[in-house]
Image (cartoon, rainbow, N blue to C red):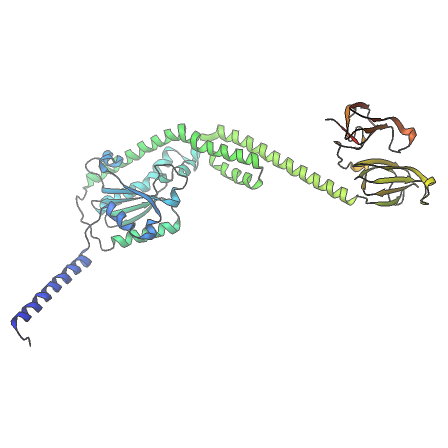
Length: 447
């Protein structure tokens, strides 16, 4: 079959090499790949670009300086540890914040021991800082006090904070399990029952000590620098914005302070919240009153035209708004003899009409005095003392070279009602009493 021995030897050698390679491949596949340290697992995870984009940073912990390692001693549960930061989860958190941890243990028994300890940690916290006294606030501040999400694979354990997004959580878990697929860990230094109990006690003691430290820091530092300052800032913002939505959210978040540990600050903040609520309600009441008044004015507004008093409008006083002309007549003839009073006015005027008379208004609207429409008292116009301006002495200045001032006893605009009047230049003082009328033309009150 073969032409010479050399060819036979070559083919045989090749077959042996291929066979050995296949054997090693099968051993590697079925027997498991070399075990990985926590750092190696992390390095492989970030080889996936999707994971790399999520990781802000990661750090291998030197076990010689690791708190738990030092506390437990030579029987330390894990052989390597890496901590990493999720970019999205890290946002607005303190410098030493980590989103996840990867630990590799000597054996799965030790890994389970640590997992059980982490589950018990929240129990210790609740015992040391009971919900009846502290509520949920501590858990909101220290996310690591909540039992983290745990992923176990071989001798490796990955812990992920519950603050990591669900999407990122899924990707980390898939990549972690994919890397450790077919990795075979040896089970070394299996713990004896006595060792287990000793380590459990040390872990519990460590948890008690850390929570005591946490409680001390919480009482003296966290409340002032983080919690109260956050509430203070939020309350100040709502005080400025007067937003009902923001106030509603603030009131909802106050439930985290409604516990004996925070009573003094809670009461102080609730007083401020009550003041905000009162201010918002007052503002709403003012806006509603303004809306109703504007609606009432709009419904009772009379436009330019000629009106018969007693038929079209009732007898009484009316405020004219605008710069225009009015006339009061005894009949509808339109003759000069029928005119009782008339005037060209600036900004506004006031007229009193009787039943049977006719009021004609041009280039202005008018309202019944009882509605007390807003008028501008800073310029020329006619003002009722005690309604639009207070009784007292006023300083006047002309808008140009000269101005005109008139004080009247009524709004009939006849000579007999004039108490005093003057065309003046330069400044002038005038005194008025309640019930009188001050008419200004080409001049204004100096504030």
